[in-house]
View 1 (cartoon, rainbow, N blue to C red):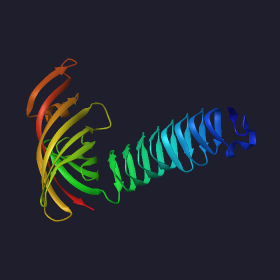
View 2 (cartoon, one colour):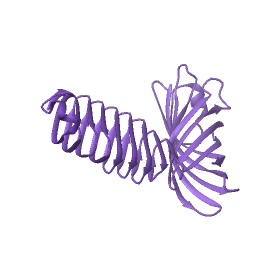
View 3 (cartoon, one colour):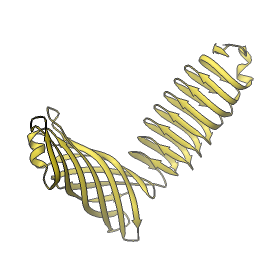
View 4 (cartoon, rainbow, N blue to C red):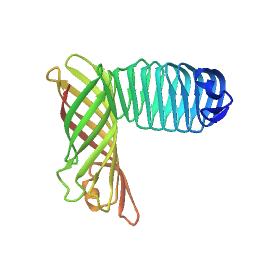
Length: 283
C-alpha cells in the first residue's frame, strides 16, 4: 500500500517485489502482480501481471498480462491473454484476448478481438471498428451514389467477414444541405470467385453547417461482381429510417413506406426504400 513510489510499505524495494494485492492512491510500481492492483492514477508492473489491474489513468505491464486491465485512458503491455479496457487506447505486442477502447487498439499480432474506432495490427483475428488496418485484412476505396443523388467517397476496411465503413461526400440535388457523411459496419455473407454478397448497417446525414438536420440510418443488401482481383461493382436495395427538419430534407425523402410529421409539421420521420450502387478498388 502507498501513495506514490517510493512512498509505500515496500519503500525503495517496490520495483523488485511481487504482490498479491496493491493499493496506491496515486501510482504504484512492482516487479509482478498475482492478484489485484488498484491505483488512482497508474499501475506500473515491470514484468508479469495476473489478475485485475485497475487504474484511473493507465496500466503498464512489461511482459505478460493475464486477467483484466481497466484504465481510464491507456493500457500498455507485452503479451495479453485477458481483457484490456481503456478509455482511449490499448497498446500491446501480442494480444490473444480482447482489446476494447474508446478510440485506438494497437498490437503486432492479434489472435483475439479488437473493438474500437480504430484497430491496427500486423496480423489480426477479429477487428470490430470503423477503421481496421492489418496486413492480412482487406482495405478498399469506393465511390457510391444513392437514391438521394448523394455521391460518397468511402473507405472500407476489415477482415474476411466483418468490416468498417467511413465516408464523406456531396449531395447533387440540394442547394444548402449538401455535405454528406456516413459510418457503419458491414458483413460479407457469401463470397465466391467472382461474386460476393454483403450486408451493411450505416448511419449518416447531410449537413449545411447551419440550421436544420437530415439524418439517415440504413440497412443495405449489396450483391457485388468482381471485375478483377481488386475492382468490384456493387449495388442493391436499402431500407432507411430518416429524420429531417428542413425543407430540403423533406423534399428529398421519397419512396416512403411510412411517415409521420411532428413539431407543427416542421419535422418528418419516415421509413423509406432506396438503393446504393458503386465501384470500389481494394488494395
